[in-house]
Length: 261
Length: 262
Image (cartoon, rainbow over all chains, first blue to last red; front, side, top):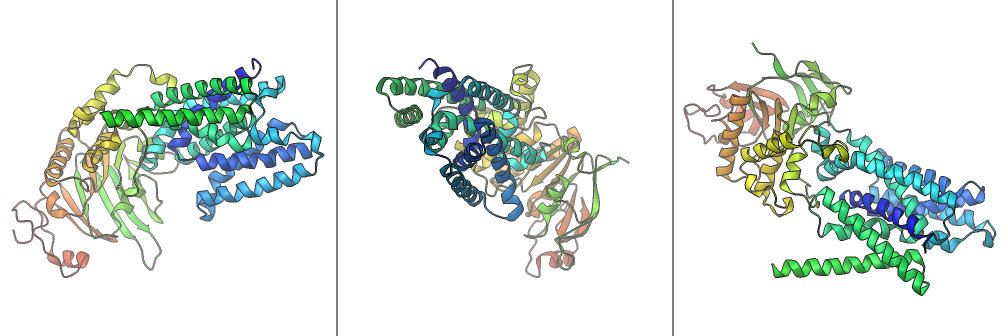
């Protein structure tokens, strides 16, 4: 528990920051796509015995950038492109991993998260990309926010919109890798969408959304880990479940206060 | 004579057999209020899109503030332009206060978060002033999504004004406004031209509503059919070329440009 808490909370802070931009730019399906595509990256790393996290990181960012560039080039809609790459790289990952003997790969950990077994080396790597993500967020949050509100006017007022969008996708790719460590491939989207979704009901500006989203994520992760430790439930799933419960409660309270107004 | 704020020369756009814009030349001095009118699909919005760099003309060139508009100087030149585009497919679901939306129009809005906590008093004054122009300052703490279409449009106009532009490009700014608000808007724009020397290029299809306010009207349908200055009449054949035979001009005013029954 003590070992898992700092990385889990750190990942929660990073994921909840980017979460705000994912909701604003409607990229939740992109996170589904990239997280599943990361299986191919992990498969490549395992098959050729590359370092696991760096390979997955590079692969996820590449996929994210590909998805940012693909639709414009070929006239394929973005969700089709995401679905395509998502299925393709998942299939590739399964084939690659199936070639490796069973006890070498913690497939359950890849799919559902294994924050309890984070090594010192992995922790350093998580810190490194996490700080990069936060730095990118703090530097470009306003520009991304303004593009999410009205991309045409943002471009007309002199913002390099396509470059900023590319950087956003790359940052989302990086965040996905971190979340895969905590919540696994299948549950990453929950971690990247739920915090800001809870905040969306209450926040009224970029800063308040960001702070709320972080608070929800930190509280959810903390409670989730407590439960997971106490009842021996899988940690990633418990955290996502806690966030879901928090969303339902938050939504209920918002609904009640709206009605009583 | 003042040097032009914007000058378009021999702009062509679209395939050569069915051009969208055909040999367009226009000039605008500071303080000049120009209306561009024409039927649907005449290429009115296309002209504005070219000035802000969303579209590249196939030939011809655009000068902004005495400099040729190029890819590398575009972002710098655009800082002096306020742009209001048409509304379609426009439904942002972001929780935003009116005040924050106007702030997005500021030049330095997109700077990093840590710089934003510095001095903001002059920015605050600018934002409030822009909201006062469009009479929305009493709603500045409201959620943008809860406003009516006309109110949202006025907030967007405030966002274009808060950057203190030298050139305003407006694409049907009155589209969501009732007639009283329309007249207020045109009066405000006229006043901005006269007191702050802003040049305005405004696309509108209701010529009768704007004639009392603008300095000139350009009649556009693929090419500029006529460019009338204030007090000048637009010949009837120009109307028929643009809109076909079934065209009635209803405005009756001695000072009105579009009226040929004066």
